[in-house]
Image (cartoon, rainbow, N blue to C red; front, top):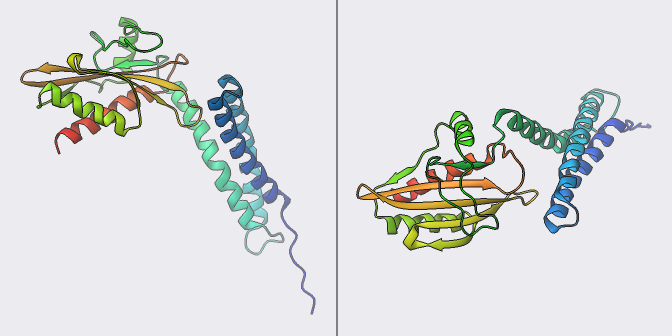
Length: 243
């Protein structure tokens, strides 16, 4: 008795290959940008091309899944599923990137205190907060950002703030306890873009008040990253102190 195996779906196979290639290309573009093999703008261009390749991979994989569904005349359903799994995260990332770019204002310097923001003294380009126009855009976009009040002395608050910065993997550039000032940098996961963070601890009503400023060195828009960082840091600091 002769058995005939089903022919493999070329769409399923092509979708998987293209999806994996797109993911590998994105990772390589990030590594190359971090290592200085090429300018970061090329890496960003590559990420755009990757999103198109991932969209095509998803179309091919979905079509391949239809071709190889149970009872169909072609094999390769597992390959189609893997192709979908490889391409979907890349498409989701591209959508999120585009959505954030359209949703958040074109600013990249955020502070909990916009009238008397912490100053970057020990960074390559020391600067004050940009000013009233940026402050207005910030308040409209992130009305929840505010100074954190702690019921502990400033010296204790400073030590907790410094320890948390280290726990988060930030590179501490300077720490000045007598001024209640911490300056640090952190890098983005994929392309290694550097963001700068300043933490300021001052006495207030028998306790302490903590302000944080976070800014991106590159670009005019941060897609909400700096505000998100400040929120997470202050929430973690508040929780740490209240343990």
